Image (cartoon, rainbow, N blue to C red; front, side, top):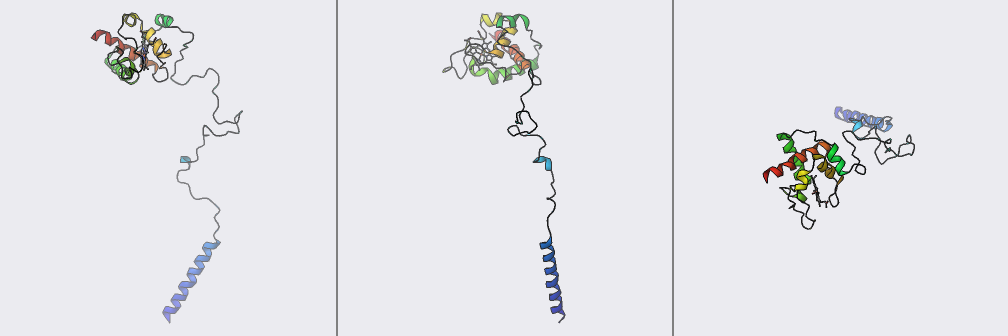
Length: 183
Ligand code: HEC
């Protein structure tokens, strides 16, 4: 008898609980643990921005804007000769500078100009053999002339102004000068 009563009470309680849940209406969203992980306040570059004059989230930078750390170098107006006369290598020829120069040279120049700068890079051939970097011409060149070639390119050689930072260019030049001493 007691057990029966208990069962009834149980069923009644369960039903009451179930009905309470049914009546439960969700008014607020779940608690967001780290909302800024997926609800960024910034616009995505390809999205629309109603506040932007042309409706695009990606704005065009104002005229003459220069990216941080970027030194403008006008290849159309600055010819090689002028660069040789006016530009000075701001770096001292230290062990660190030479190591950095070697690293960057090995990454960007070695494939064409070769380990010793003689033009025996791994892509030669089929790529035409570049002139030697230990030629009399380059030896007599000022650092600014080489800087100009790296920054603006020269005939078949593409420019490396985007891949190689300004200081790294000067470091490469110190490194290239070392080829001369070894030969
Ligand atoms: C894709 C191959 C290639 C790469 C990579 C390359 N160069 Fe060149 N480089 C050439 C060619 C080809 C020439 C000759 C261009 C010409 O006909 O005037 C040249 C010319 C030069 C010259 C002028 C030599 C002269 O006698 O006129 C210098 C200096 C030079 N490169 C340095 C570099 C440096 C430093 C790098 C790395 C940042 C580099 N190059 C990367 C192919 C390359």
